[in-house]
Amino acid sequence: MEQKNFDSPTKLPIVQEIIMSNVIGAIAVILAKRLGVENLKALKAFYESETCAKLHDKSTGLYLYGNEYIADEFMLEKGMAI
Image (cartoon, rainbow, N blue to C red; front, side, top):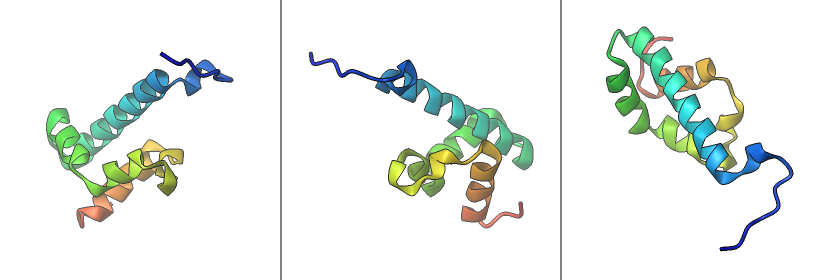
């Protein structure tokens, strides 16, 4: 198995995956509060959204924005008031 030399431990793929999981969890909590639903329901809705797909696509740059902004993007995608 080839190991790549990373400048920082935070650039390791496993660490990036953990960070993304934490971000998505935080967004789900924000959405659950806004929508008045269970965290798990909000998480499922977010995972199935185009916003989540864009978050995973580094070419969109959405991963650079804050959790509240990303939650706003989800709400706009679903046609809900912010």
